[in-house]
Length: 317
Image (tube, rainbow, N blue to C red; front, top):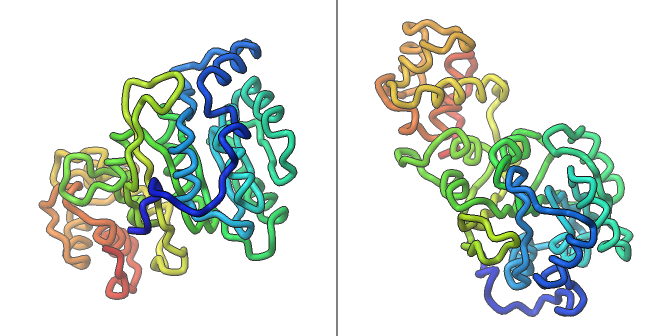
């Protein structure tokens, strides 16, 4: 693990008075004056702990050679810190009132693009193209975000599967979701997100964040997860859409044995004998439960089902 991001660091951040968005009293007045009331259904809980905000940015290891995507920036406390460190920032905010507040609170930064859209509906390839074109040549692409609790799973899945070329993601997530992402095979929390995270990255929880670090105060605590992305060329020559379907089918009936879970999935459309043969070719016990298979197991299984070669070259654990 890298140096603890919450320890002392010589890196400079904005002086406390230069980012008032971390002050609860200021934030409350700002939101009230705009007639904005945070909605639990949208996971609108805003970071008010400056130390945690600085630590999140530090964990991303930012400099002017980085282009950063932020999702759900809210009023912009973290956005301001990102703009101070990175060469270019794109912040995606779906709420129009929050986007208006964000524009006002970040008006002094010229390296920021604010996108008023739902991240799950945004044209991500086009957004990434604009972000890259506005950044330095060969800029490293990173994601730093406090993800809305209500849609953190779908957002993370889209980021992982995007093929955008992210090198690192630092995400603040509900504690339960974070623990699910880093869960090893065999655990209760191990599931589809756990497998996806390990196919595309090396995930680790680097810090806990108290519910008291947010306004409004949520009912649960959070964690900061850092995902070091695995370059796409390191993945085997496999249809990734098909791989996702195999993982979906397996965890759709996780209480069943693997062979029964997959054979019972109509969308996948494979017979039990074919699945048995694929498991044999991949070195997997067809009587295993879905949560007992590693990311590498799922890749080998999908490779065998698809009739592809290169099973022996897969090194993902």
